[in-house]
Image 1: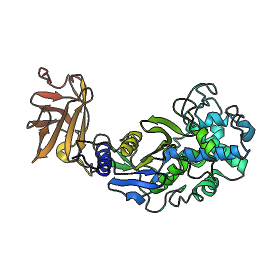
Image 2: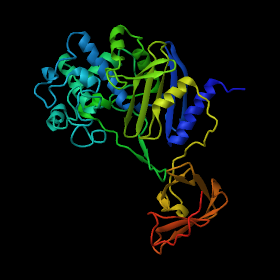
Image 3: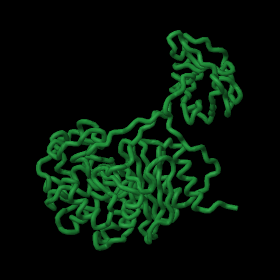
Image 4: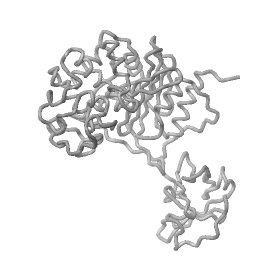
Length: 428
């Protein structure tokens, strides 16, 4: 008998947590009336946990711009110099900024804005004089976080309120997004980055991004994202005219409208946005026609395709093979010390990762995968070509690893290392 969709959806989250090495991941499916399903996987704050939503913040900024346009305060096709004065990119329009067709560079010059304490608007425009342009205005789609920093200042100038106050007064408070905020609330989820080879986590910085806040600053919960998704499907015509929402969802270039990512799905059109900041990934999609959508939040810098996970949650796809939950590594045992990393069998590259108390050896080209676990003080194969074989770790006098050997297969740090005796190759 086929498993219920509810269980399938939880499996989707569990697979994402295990395969993506996520400390926690939460998700929800909703329609016009509320939450249809919600679930969580991993160790985190659960469905009430607050996560950073990254570039989903851009949808809030875009709505503020469109509200200002509807109020006659902004002309989308006028150069932003009309509102911002003589700046480096004064010739681009708000429409081009909204749709990432301005030709501006992707990121602001200066320190890495996502990981550095943000400066004010004057410092932002002083450091970005237009010399970083990659295309003429309207030339082609080129995603630009910098452009949304400028849009935040446009709406601040025409309304007389800073973006941080405006987004709270005009959108967050009227929609009842009580757990959506500029800065993290107490007990918000920490952002984690996971070492690719060892599985050890490290905390990511939680910065206030200053003038770049309109591009990716906000924090939220799965419940508040459901409400925002319903808004993007037209639940509050008193806050944004339905015709304006429809205008935002029309692709300008490369599946991007005015502040909204647009994609086709079997059930219809999906609009929304993804988000990422150091330590976090997020996704919100909704079909404006049916009102059906999904939201995903996780506290990991990388690891999963959030858009595909959101689609899987909506469709409830069944997954046959469910891996064991990922558990962060505290320390790599001394028997495996120095092993995680990149190794070569001849010219063939393999990554060696310490994962869930075992060693995975995975060919980077092809599908070959071996797994070893500690049996006493030895690493013994439990799956793959080397099942039952012992992985021998050859160390130098100083304790560093010279090479690995398993049944005459020799792995070296560089291809055909001349300092290591390598027997004839074996077909695999």
